[in-house]
Image (cartoon, rainbow, N blue to C red; front, side, top):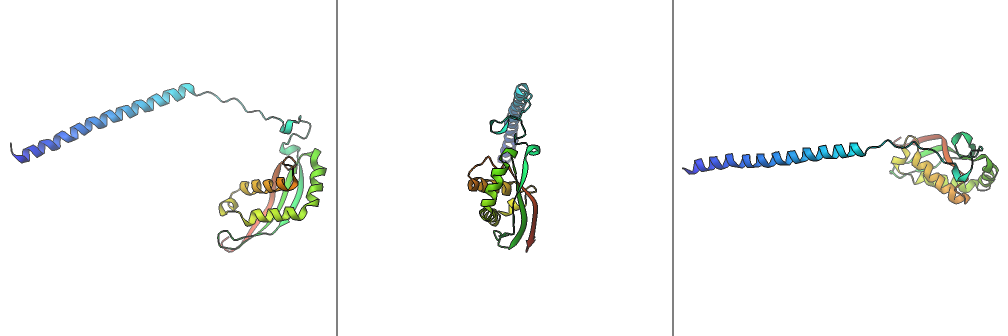
Length: 175
């Protein structure tokens, strides 16, 4: 047997060994996949329907905190700038809030007393906002940050249930 024949045999033997190994691994993976599928299928249960609990332990007497039961309170109109991206963007926005009817007078009184501080906090949130937050269709992050600032400023996180931004206009370079 020449060295060329020995090399040819070695080339043929190596793929068969690898083919056997790959076949075993493939069968094990298929078996694992079928096992995982069957186990998850057996354990899959229908989730229980969600039931909303009253907010703050209140009964559903018009102050439950549902959007239809809440009153709107105008907070501020602002025109802040944002330079986070390196480009100047000017915003014009109106911010309102939803509050429970039982807390409407107290909330309106605090908003009137702290009008300029509220405007300052809203401007701060917009001036420091990241471009991704400004691009959100519902401005969820901006609203959440404004609500946090208002909760801190008013001293009671139960007064304002939700922040609304009914008007939000952007202008400037890059917009």
